[in-house]
Image 1 (cartoon, rainbow over the protein chains, first blue to last red):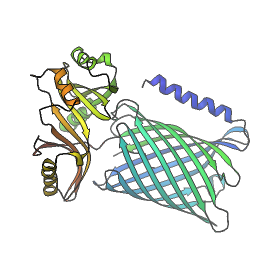
Image 2: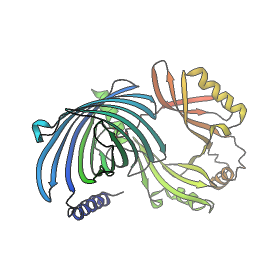
Image 3: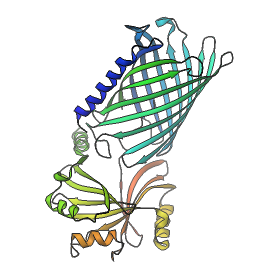
Image 4: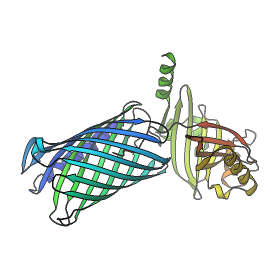
Length: 227
Length: 183
């Protein structure tokens, strides 16, 4: 697929974004992350990431405001070539940025992928314990993802790829009603060199849609370094 | 230093890309044009590995997946058909299984293909049609991609077994650079 086509897809995303701006229960945010992946050995790999989230649009106004900063670590054990188990720990700094609660998050994850020629399907189940200052939230999530290179069946250096996913989330905590969320994500990535991947995309979230739906659009940018 | 640069430039030169039929070598286009009409979903690929170039057309015929490989000059190299391991002839199957069991602590088959190597005497048309009609007199090799575990090390290899199921060789496949975006 040509780069002009890729560009058109991105433009279409931004065009639809403009339409959504008329809603008042709507917020637009951006998330930028930088991640480092390392293979310790065949079976074990580690990931470190820094992620920043910021408001771009809230209360019917465009404005830039930092929201939080995440420090993330994941350890992944490959059970075989397409099954893996991961454990994650994340610290979120929010209090000194926008006044929200800081958070310690523990994650347990199971991932399964299935490849069919160029298409690859991924099923991911996560359990999270979000430990906030006055509250602990237990969250279960399931994500279905699909990815493929934009040219041929194999991703070569210099080529672009597409990643799309849908995720359902259920949050439980002691004093609040269970909350259901849904997220749809599309991203375009580019394998710049053997070690560097760049990704851009959008994520649309329906948060607490069983209670009082809030809609959020995220603009995602990330750089992934493999060493 | 020199070695590392060499390795790097090698990876850079390896490329598989989807192309159009018109970009195929002329001799290969002629073969493709003569494929039976019920060959569906034709897709054309070009592979570059250093200075070596090859071409491949993938298609479906009677619900089976084929891949026909050509050299740079458009001469057929082989025709591969995707199969299920359990459908292989018992005797050959047990030989192949025996090889895996005795050579590795653990193994898992990922992809199994029957490989018909091109026989020039037959000519392109007869060769392809015989395989598609299941009337080929040549017994195929078996090309098997499997994940194998030896001691603590695990890798994905492509094995070749001859027409009677005897191990011929293997090559280690590079773990794909296309990793799932887990985080």
